[in-house]
Image 1: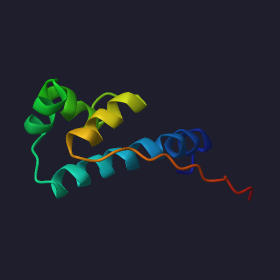
Image 2: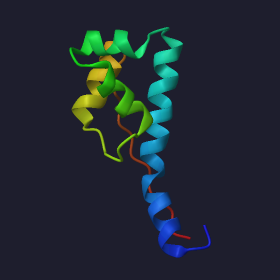
Image 3: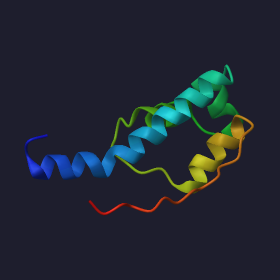
Length: 86
């Protein structure tokens, strides 16, 4: 974290890692496997695995996140938070 460029990139990716952790936590709470979620979504288990693991750094679309949540019986609720200036 001493390298400013590294820190900037790390902080930029932090929200996506938090989202991935939340998706996994939600799936486990509902007692579903990746295979089950994939079947409900009409996709492959490997796509769910990539979504959850961040195997390839990519940003899932809101549509994908919403489909994932719906597959578990949830809906997505967006919330915006003001960034405090320090």
